[in-house]
Amino acid sequence: MAVRTIIEYPNPHLRNTSGPVTTFDDSLRELVADMFETMAAAEGIGLAAIQVDVPLQLIVVDVNEEEHPPVRLAAANPRIVLAEGKASIEEGCLSVPMSYRAAVQRYEHVVVEYQDENGADQTVDATGLAAICLQHEIDHLKGRLFIDHISSLKRGLYDKKLAKYNRYKKREEREQEMHR
Ligand code: NI
Image 1 (cartoon, protein in one colour):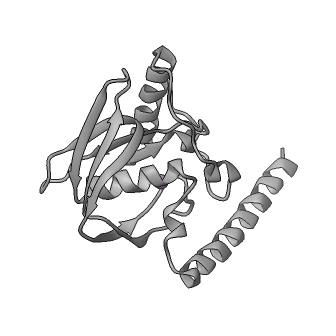
Image 2: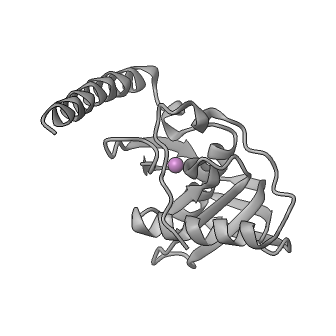
């Protein structure tokens, strides 16, 4: 098991559409184990394979809320088969820098069909945070980020701030390089 590097926006790989998982072998199970470890190390509640630069339809989720039963799973080829109600919380993403958070409109309750790491068909019925997390992770498989759902005004402000932050980071790196 290993902690993998999480790629960050605006890395264009995050925009790729992930392909279906067709082989359920040891290397897939190793990827799942790595994703759980990477998510835990980053203190996240969900992670999609594309975030560790693997364009496969694979997500891991680990949500434990008091009001609802805990949801901890690895889901290959997840599909939302039922979605109802409305919910909105401030979301963040391990691939969206500066710990940016913003409220996104989601379904409150979803049922998701998927295959587990051994290829067996499974269904999860989730409400609340787990439902939101599943929708957020499934978005990643289509190359979509939560910041794509916010207003263009908010998004513009964020992009500007991030560009400034990245320029600053680059300058710091260059300076460190010069003093070596
Ligand atoms: Ni995310």
